[in-house]
Length: 76
Image (tube, rainbow, N blue to C red; front, side, top):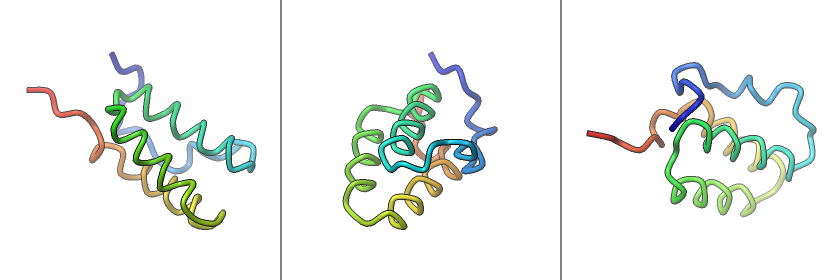
């Protein structure tokens, strides 16, 4: 069960997070889990986040958070 409303999620949720790459990945992963994102999307995010430099990590992380509803599991 999700505890966060995906429509309220944005990259602004990273404000105040330690700037360490692992801390950012952990925060985004936590948010994705709390929104109910499927593990396959979380794993894909983590793989992409680790695949580049620090700027790439920030871009991927902000993009995920700003578009979190696109990664939600469709329940019918």
